[in-house]
Amino acid sequence: MSLNNKATLFLVATPIGNLNEVSNRTLDVLNNVSVIACEDTRNTLKLLTHFDIHTRMITYHNFNEENSTKGIIKLLEEGNDVALVSDAGYPLISDPGYELVNEVIANGFNIVTVSGPNAALNALVASGLKTAHYLFFGFLNSKPSQARKELEELREFPYTIIFYEAPHRIEKTLSMMREVFGDRKACLARELTKLHEEYHRGHLSELCELHDLKGEMVLIVEGYEKEKEDISEEELISEVEELVEKGEKLKKAVSEVSQKHDYSKNLLYNAYIKDKENRS
Ligand code: SAM
Image (tube, rainbow, N blue to C red; front, side, top):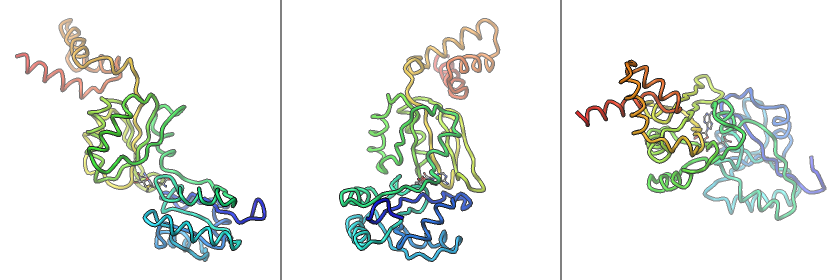
């Protein structure tokens, strides 16, 4: 299995839900390495049991990367090939393994990646948002004040941004994004590759109306576009007003203006009504 006469660390991507996404190569590697280093042996055991694989497992933890790394380097020194897996998707992508990979490189062992599923890319390609350039940000800081700071730093980033988020934080995160980024296009991808896979595409204001979101989710947000952000809500309201004065029905006027400026219909309608109330 080795590229030279030294042992190999295989970085093996595993399913993010649907077990049929395991490749023959993944099974070969998991069957043939001496040891599988995993985040949680109970999770990996389910995968191994499903495919009748009996390779020995050891744990590799985020909170104990240093000791876990030493143990794996020792195994490699003894000539054992090792596979690193996480609970789902790619190891090192919002998962442990960074320190290990660096130590393995420093010690001159081989590293081979075995391709497979990744939640971020699945969500990105189905989002309908630009894919030519993008940033994978992963999880925002769990402290709201830090998360807001991170979003502020990203505000003028011109390309699509991919976030991971937990269900208990998603509503707050969406509303914070709406405040910091403005009402950009976004896509919330849920339960990818699983039975209840679904995509909510729209503007952040529309995603903010979703409640009780459960399961695993990825949030894709459009990048900063100068021209768009330069149009103020006041200007949009004036455009609606102009059409209404010319005899257009309010809903049609809102729809026309929001389409023209790629702005949320709901948000513009509510803003228009609020503005009318304030002025009367
Ligand atoms: N290493 C993984 C990868 O390559 O995608 C990511 C692991 S990270 C600890 C877990 C997060 O990934 C979840 O909170 C969610 O944001 C995202 N995720 C994982 N599986 C998913 C799925 N089936 N559908 C949607 N999001 C998923």
